[in-house]
Length: 198
Image (cartoon, rainbow, N blue to C red):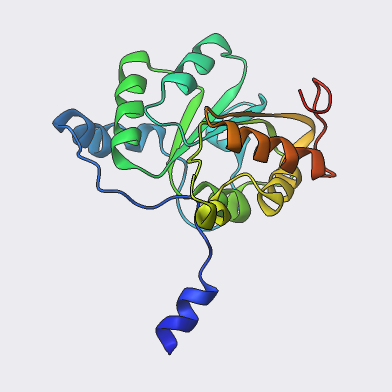
């Protein structure tokens, strides 16, 4: 009975921890490179100025995969600070290998559940932009409750983003694209700059 209660009260996650195979390079990067780029761990609100050493705007990519998009954006926009959040160790390792060779001082990395990180540690109205590219579409109807883009998450983001901040979403699943559009159009917190239905 206690196990059933714990399952019922545990949060629904938008991811399942898969066993990913780490290459030797990724494993080394997690051990040796991560300390240089890791967001400070522990409880308490993150201090972006203390972390980056400047007061530039902060952008966050949720679910960086191997980090290609994040690294490209950080190179093209050195006047922004960038935070990459990823739960899967191989993806974090690949991102760190890219950081090691590129030495981008405007990037930090968190191997974490993005929802928990944002809820518990990101200061209110402190993110200038949030990027969510190709989140798990959870294609089966019974799994739609696991989709990241839903009203509670959008409301959480709205309270952590600066007024006028930009939210960028992308998916290659038509059904999820429609789901995202409906969620955003139903949200009082966001406005589609391209117009309704676009």
